[in-house]
Amino acid sequence: MDDKKYWDERMETIGSEDLKALELEELKRQVKYVYERSLFYKEKFKKAGVSPEDIKSLKDLRRLPYTTKDELRETQEKYGGLGGHQCADTRDIIRIQGTSGTTGRPLFIGLTRNDVNLWNELFARHAWTGGLRPDDILINPANFTLFVGGLTECSGAEHMGITVIPAPFVSTGTEKFMMLITTFKPTVLFSTPSATVFLEDAARKILNVEPSELGFKKGFLAGEALSEEERARIEKTWNITARNFYGLADVAADIAAECGESPGLHFCAQGALIPELIDPETLEPVVMEDGAEGEIVFTTINREATPVIRYRVRDMVRVYTEPCPCGRTGFRFHVIGRSDDMIKVKGVNVFPSAVKGIIQSFIPRTTGEFRIVLPHPGPSFGENLTMKVEYSKEVNTEELEDLATELKTTIKQQLVFSPIIEWVPEGTFERSQYKVEYFEKLYES
Image (cartoon, rainbow, N blue to C red; front, side, top):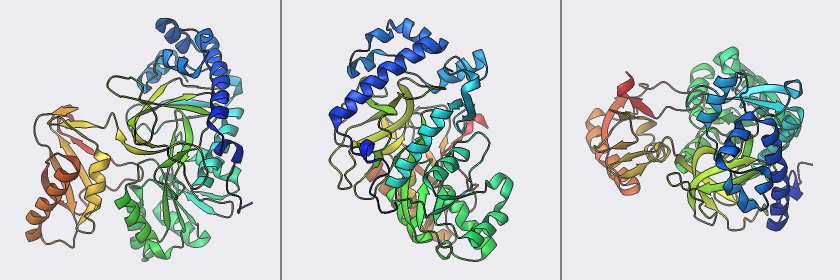
């Protein structure tokens, strides 16, 4: 079984015409389903002047209104529980989870048994694409409360046949977590890219070993985009093959993964989601062709408990549509940043994730940690912004002026804006066990 090329060859290599036919059939069914069962969507559709009978082709998807996370939060506050977009009867919902809450109040999502089974299959598709196999051992440090990175990823890995060690930091503790690593020798490093730094420090301080000595083979890195600079650092530090995975609690926990043969994350959720590309400012469609950039939007077409229609996840992506040697027909994409994280500095669009990649390219002279200081609410700033950047212990303070000039020049050349560099010593910023906060908001202090 480990030698097979795909987890689900039919869906992962499906032709475009067959996929369109499947998507149209499932879209019609899903739209009718939410219209009949969701107070939230029935009201939205009526306000937009559209009904299920109007969906006759995939192009008609554009007639349906967009959905935002704020709208779903509002309907949950209004109706309580899962809100007005709950479609399945509560008796049929077997699990309630939620988003991480890093951008506001957590959004709760429900799963029926069919939803869980689908998510398990999507996990297997994208994990197989990324190189995970049933003989792997995965230790999971994620929080097991509402966060899908905990229970959901363990469920999907078990479905695939992977040995799972559930060991959330919050209850396991760092020392016991490290003990579990030395005892069971997991092969899969499951983490956000940012949190690998926290794990590296723990390995050195508690076990007195380098991370590369722990025996990990593969990196299952999700929750954030993985820059090439960060990938190189993680692979060298841990002696692993590091690949990026992508998913969203509010849409599907597991959607895409890198295959290692071509740039970008393969879309692996055929038959479960319809993706679109839009301009985040005009909301007009962007043709999904090779090299196109825009905000990715998802519509669930096989979801029972809490479906979402034309859901704006706020991720800005670059799309790759040229054939991949691996044989998978799903388009590929690279996450550039988030449209709600993007700031404009003197008219230039700046994504913190792009800044992060440059600062990490200066490791070991920097630690890779930084914060962009925002003096007032954005997203537009008419002044040059200050960036606090950690310099490493290896750097003498006399070198910092020249290093600042070099860093500013690189940022100017690659990202077309000029920050003010403020150096802070290594250890100034708390190491994240999940995602990094890129901004220091002076107006909130």
